[in-house]
Length: 232
Image (cartoon, rainbow, N blue to C red):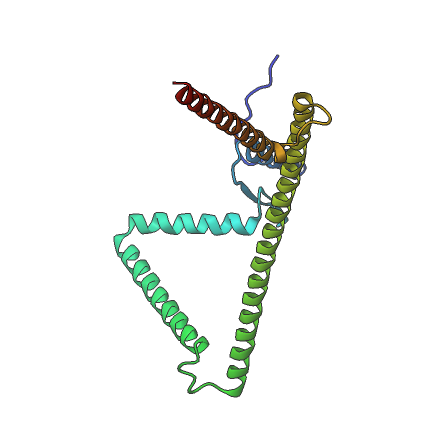
């Protein structure tokens, strides 16, 4: 048989009431924890026993849960009450104006303006603030310069490595050209640097030989022509 339906009403017996409270309290805390984990919900649970003892659970922190609750409740109230909403935004605008005025005054003081009315202690605090700001700016500048130097060094190393690889390729090509030269011209062949002058010299010698032959031929023809004239 299943359990009978329990009537929801105050338990008169104090012992039974305490046992029931302990069991259901633990079950409620367990369910709250499971709900926050399974559903990614922000849960806050507060329990006061009849004897005044406090039992609570919060998925993040009880303070943040309560602050969020109060904020949501206030916004909900403002939506339902237009008059309260107007007053809220008026006070918010006044607070922002006051904050803006304070920031403008602080900025002018940091720029060395409107320093009248400040005590020696105020001026000392302002000086300390400027020194801290200047220190922060210098640290940031130094960090940027260090990063830029490291980047330039990295690029320089890459360029140097590329130059080494190019030199290796050039040496390899030179060796291949030398091998091809040996295959074409032989071990004692004319070098590439002297090949053009050598060809020019050979052409010049051929020209001189042809020119000499032409002169000899012309001289013989002239002699033959003179002999024919005498005989004629």
